[in-house]
Image 1: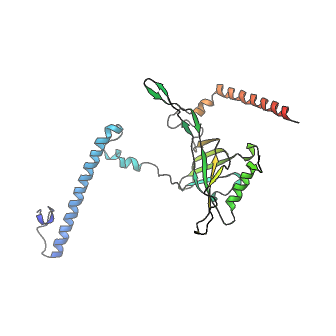
Image 2 (image 1 turned 135 degrees about the horizontal axis):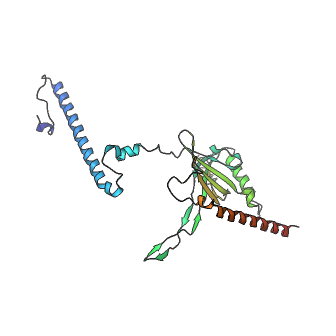
Image 3 (image 1 turned 180 degrees about the vertical axis):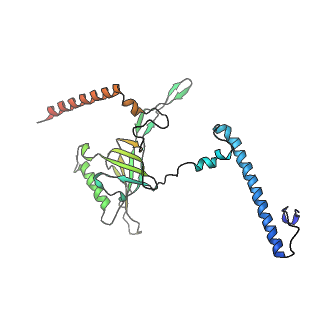
Length: 273
């Protein structure tokens, strides 16, 4: 029987007469009613959500449990954690001295656009990778500083600049899974230490530790995935690398390299003394 005293919750009419048993039965009935109403409300909200978003997001979104957001989300692989990574530095510098990495990717400029058909059409004009930023742990014997100073001295010393081949190096950033297995590699080619941020902020008002954030310009980069290096693009895009590996392009590239080699030899012979 529903009782106004308990907000419409069914109160048992048959008890053994003790206050404790009455309270227990009322509590059990209340919990059952709340759970039932919660289930109904959740189902109604879920159905409303799917019926509203389904037509907008495509036929793959259905109201059935097996095709719901929950089941689809649960079927995904585990998320990648930003703590699962390592770095390969030139000269065998220990990767545990790298505390964080800001790994850039190729970006395209779209320019001002071309006006066609009553609207602007944008096409890529140039690509730029920017700078690779690494934050170094600095110990009490300045191991990171010794490494970076040695690298900077290979770029220029006392106003004399070295050949690029002597100081431009490759830095490799590896993304790992939770077991330490490789899932992705970022190769940054042509890196050299350009400028540091927040280095050597000495003071007498704090005991904060010293760290170095170093930026490295990048000439070009590549991203590779294990098992997919030589396979077709899994998402159906036309990979430019496959096009450039065609016979006509390869022949042209080989001829261009041969011409460049001959030109380099001619120039070297002309300036030798």
